[in-house]
Every structure is written in structure tokens, then in C-alpha cells.
Length: 374
Image (cartoon, rainbow, N blue to C red):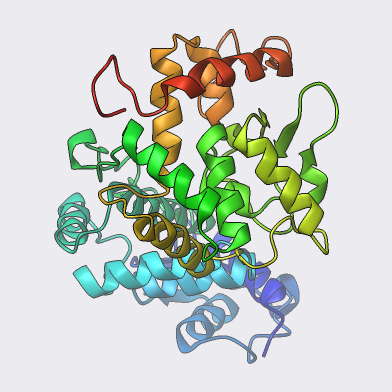
């Protein structure tokens, strides 16, 4: 098999000679006679498919060449060979496979907006969430953009700027805990001997920090600061788990049961991971963790809420306590660039301010202007 990088270089050289059309896909081109020495065709009989060998032959001897169409699957193969294996390869493979299953393995220059719209409708009919649909559209758009660039194909990208609106009403609703449910969970975690110690600690830390389950479960011992005037945790990328977006990199204060839970977890830890009984690192293991935490909530006799409800509960409590919006966003790890963000200045907020904000909100957990729900 020919070296992929040499093969790619060869085909690009061939392509640059295919004037005046400036492309070798789906169009007959007139190719002037060239010698093998001029193009360095030492690999012309190795690693090339029949279509590519025909192009080489046409270049060597001059004449007309009508290449086969390049299907989406062929475009993916070209892109994979061009870029080599990387972390995103699987995402592109999944996107192409799903489109081909929906609309067929179409010639890339024959894919029209109507095909894309039909593909979107089919994905939505199967229950795919907007985020999933948009990710596949983005991957397909990037794939065609690269292939169009490689082969100088002058055609509008049918996937470009296609995006499904994330309808708020269509999103899965997360109900925060009520004040009674908070009290019930607190009692269960404090008195039950059946609750896994790590699960108990994670729930207590989420309760008072508003962090996501994977963010807390993936902490390292070195991420926890329990000494000093303002104990806190550092949420950042590590070798146990990633974070969703850069905004999720932040420091969060440890107050009340969250601080007690962090101290006990540090004392129990036997390695670099803060929690050893709950493993994460992939979507499947994160799902197992979420199920374990949700089961703990269910066994406490609480229904209609999940572990994510604790995050929503603190967010609502901070809003009711009139914690300023920017501070709320910094504590929960959301928010884009603004004059208050690190684009201007550091964007950092003193830990004393963060601690005071959480302490102000905690008495309001489960209460919403004297209503039962957060």
C-alpha cells in the first residue's frame, strides 16, 4: 500500500494539471501530456484505485478523462486518509453513516438542500435532540468543506449554516427540588447506612455548589482546597474527565455539607482520584454514575426529580437571593464573552464574594417566593 501522504500529494499534482475545469470529480477534463518524471509517479501502480489509475494514465499520455462521481462515503475515506486518525474521526463516521442510511450514498456534488432537510426531519422523527442533530450537520459541513477545498470544487455547501433551533419548550424539563424534598434528601444522606459514601459525598457537594455530577465525580484530590479562609474546589480539565466547554473551568466555594463531604472524601481517598467507587471517563460510565445517584434519590422516597435538579435548585436560589447575574454564571460555569469577562481584565471574582453568594442562597433552597417549588 502506498504511503497515504505520497498518494495524496500525487493526486493533488494530477489535479492541478486538470485545467481549465479545476476539478476532477464528475466532470470530463482535458489533460495535457506529462511525463512520469515531471509528476513523480513512482507509486502509480501501488495504492491507487481504478479511478485514480485511470487519471494517472491520462496524465502520462494526454487525453480526456471522465472520473467517477465521488460519493459521500468516498469523500469520508479521502478525508480520513488525508487527516489520519484523530479524536473526531468517529464523529464524522457516525454522521456520514446516518446520512447515507437516510438519503443514500449520494454524489457529493448532487447533495441538495432538500436532501439535508429530509435528513433533519428523519433524525428528529427518531427522537434525536437538537444538539445531536446540529453536531451531525456541523460534522458533515466540515467534511464537505475540506473535500471541496482539496479538489477545488466550486459549489455551495448544502450543510453549511444548517442548524436546528433548540426549542426551549421541547427541551426535557428539569424540576428543581422542593424544600421538603431537600429536607428528605438531607435526612436520608445523614442517617442511611446503605448509601455509598462516595455517592453521598457527591450529592452533598452538588447540593451546595450547583456543579454537574461528572464535574464533581471527576475531581482529583489536588483539585480540593479544604484549608484556608475560603475552602473551594478547582474545576478544570484533568486525566479523569473533561469539561463540556471552557466556561466550565472555574473555582467554586465549599460551604456547609459540601465542605464536610469534601473533607471526608479527601480523608478516604487512596490515590489521585477523589472518588474511587464511582468511575467515569466515557458516556457509558457517566450514565452508570447518574443512574447510581438517581437511585439514591429514589430510595430516599423522592420522586419527580433527578441529580441535575440539585443544580437547578441552587441556580434558582441564587436568583431569588438576588445574586448578580455575572456571579451566578461564573459559579455554575456558563456565560459568554462580555465587558465583564476575561476579554477585559481577568474576569475573576474573589473567593470571598463567591462564598458569600452561596451562603446567601443556601437558606432559600427549595423555596420560590414562598411557593413550594424552587
